[in-house]
Length: 193
Image 1 (cartoon, rainbow, N blue to C red):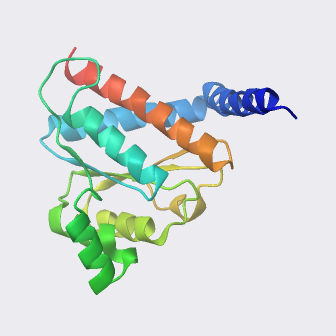
Image 2 (image 1 turned 90 degrees about the horizontal axis):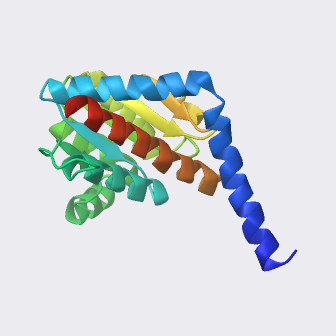
């Protein structure tokens, strides 16, 4: 297969994953529920926290920035934070305790009832993400999960699960950022009509 044919194949796979979301009405309703949950949290003075590993950490940071910065509108910042951006904290806790605890320990420190945790894991099985979810639930935070097709161990732990209908990690991550952008846009529109 030529390089151009491979490029076309990759683009087609990305489009197919997005088309699967476009035709999944139940998943679209879950995305709408995420919008409503975040609008309620922000309107009530609560915060939104994001966590993920690797590419999912990059997506978490990107989406948090869309809320604290802006999406389309020049508006007041919304309180959202990616939990991994303090490298001194991350490396200290990973060294002194374990990497499995980096997010759960921080949620214990900053999370409050009514806040929202947005947890990203393409497999749905990352131990540090699962521990963060469990801690968040104990503290009364709502949890939105972004995963792949199976949902992994996150499937039964999240209040709302956005499980992209794909088992291919890059395609899942592409759909996570697309879905995250949809959510950011609609939250901004509802809060700042």
